[in-house]
Amino acid sequence: MRGPRLEFAVGAFLLLALASLLVLAIASTNGKLGLGSDSYELKARFSTIGQLRAAAPVKIGGVVVGQVADIQLDPVKFDSVVSLAINDDIKDLPADTSAGIFTSGLLGESYVGLQPGGDVEVLKAGDEIVMTQSAVDLMQLVGKYMFSGGGAPAAGDATAEPATESSPTEDTP
Image (cartoon, rainbow, N blue to C red; front, side, top):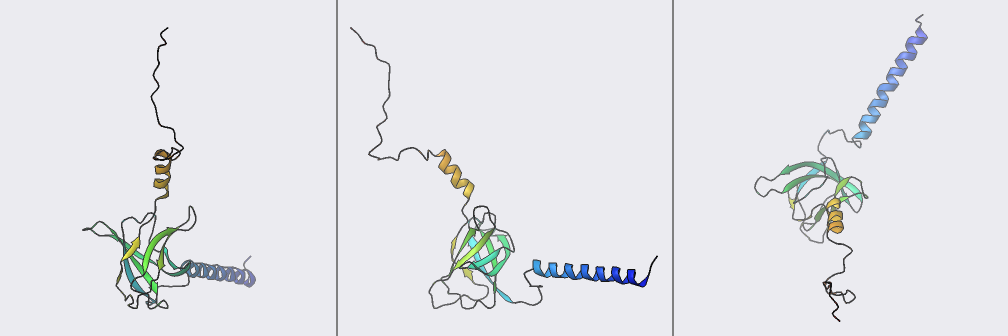
């Protein structure tokens, strides 16, 4: 029947399960619980964002320095306006910093890559990164190559023979 040992074991098991869930919750948020503001916001405009999603990483030299906070459509210019939450420990990004949307590997996640410039002016919270590079659509590139005659000789190629029409001729004796 029920004894103090069984009740203790069930209680210990439940506490262990709750502790495991807490550790999983903290790990899934990269240790950030959303308490307080330890980042500042920058904006960047892209004509095409591909598969970029909110909470995607922002990297400098392959190191994560923030995340995508929000993605909105500009109703006037029809550009995608991406809000970047940059960690507070990354200070004094030059004003000529450029941003691009890249993919980790062939089928990996999309992320925003920042390339700091050399300007003495720095970006402040709320500023916009002017120089941007939109996402490259891999399927579109493959389609262009496959269906545009990727294997055909280029115009002006000296090794290409000129195209001639062959018509049946009659030999008259």
